[in-house]
Image 1 (cartoon, rainbow, N blue to C red):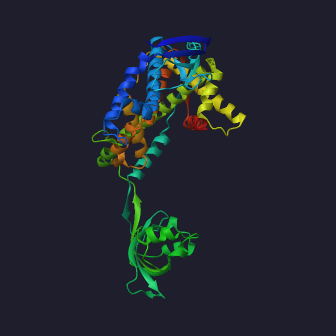
Image 2: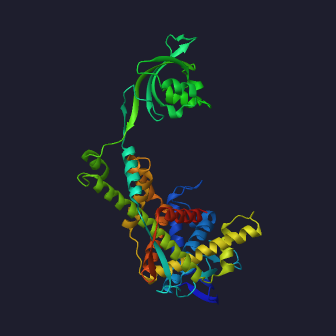
Image 3: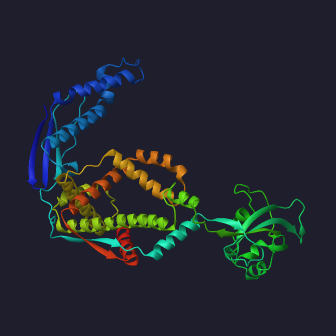
Length: 462
């Protein structure tokens, strides 16, 4: 049976020595040798017939090293678990640990010495009603609601033909039929297409002024490249002339005869039942007042989510300041150096350790809170959060057809699942802490709140 000896260096650092005697690992070593003997082919021997002594000489050292590493890792893990020891980071082989003298022909006792960083024992400070925090309650003005309704109407608007005697506006679309010219004449077998363009995208003032007097059916000549101060050949070729992006052979000139086919203007959606059903769901909203109320509810919910994030972030900063838990500095610096870049300067290494230590301190406090408040995050909650994040991203571009495949990939990404789990764990723990503090509702206007939100986002991104 393996022997284990623990020596406490201090409250944050211990050495654990594990000794494996021959009976502790020999059965597994023999089992692995037998597997190798059955499946491996060696020159000069039939498959499965290589003598055991020869097999040990050829591959025994590698197999034995793997078996010893596997067994000592299992013994150490079981010991830490049985003793309720929470290590910081991964146990490291002690610097004085000498290389093992492995002989697969003569199995013997092997000793491993590990340095282990220990989680400090402490009680989280600052969780009581004397700690006061603000939860922002954002005022929503009638003007903001009207503006949001106007945006929704614009998003759902469609271009409709307009009368030709109405003045052309900058954002109106003009539909043209284009036919390629050569030396001022229609080119035989020249390029032909139809395209739409608004005057707001044109720089040529002479062209824009002339369009104010033109009617449907009018025909005129133009050099498309002269419409823009900085003509983009890609845009003209593919977006105006409608030449496919993968067509690299078609050669066209700059001059075209344009015929006006139609003038189109964006017409806002009418505030009718069809519009309300499309935007808010069937039979949920029936008039403008109900539409404004639904919009207000949505805006208020969005503000409330951001307000909670600000509150929880304030609480997190407060707890980090109140709980500067001690760490086994030398052990953690050694662990960090084994993962780091040897080209870093001393100052860069110190900065890296400072950031690592700050992250480690908060992780310790967070997990203490998780245990203190019995916080649990389920697999279903993780999946729901991932789905919501992907939905929010796709909603910006209306790419909902990608939803299923992106969710499937995300749920197979171990890092994304783990990060989402840790985020939810932190949010739940901080919400539990908030119930023990004094939270004061504070009314602010939209501008003030958005400035606070912008400052917070800038600090977290930085």
